[in-house]
Length: 230
Image (cartoon, rainbow, N blue to C red; front, side):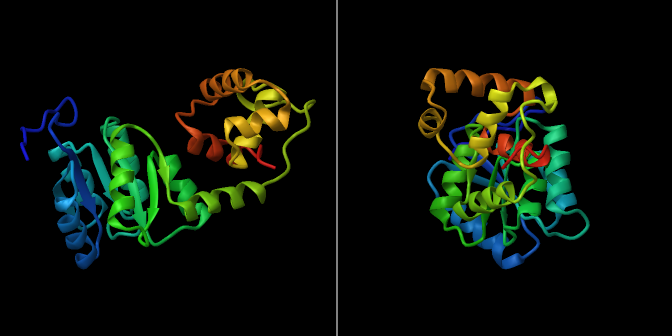
């Protein structure tokens, strides 16, 4: 694989996705580095033993993606994610952890994580999440997605149309957001609301702009934190 010297302006443009691994468990960290080195199109450039080292190595190597554990000494993965994203918004974070509770998931997504996997994931799933993150797309473990939906359905019922909605959302946009939080596709929302798919897409574009959401994972997080999920 060819490598180029990291640039202070952003991740290196190379033939492979540059990945930094951050995990305090030696066996996990070294195993991931070995497996990722064998994966097509992925170049593991460095490994960090804690969050502070992850932040420092991310600044030095400018990876495209950081594969981040959550529970680490000195600085946890959530705060490390927040610091890396603030300093290098072009670097994406994929969480790889044993924790799939809704609070851990929501906190990590809020900090800027692009993907979230549990350590039950195999190298194929991990590689796919890295590739998605490098393309600035979100990929969530099925168990993680289920946990998000469970958290959303346990939230306080949404306000009535007469209740003031946040960020100038219209009642229809809030309704579309609720259905997104239930995991519905655009086609399913079309059927549920008896409107065209073009209208659904228009509502989604408008509400994403209003709530500053890049993707559905962030929209679900917004719905949950603003008590708009039913």
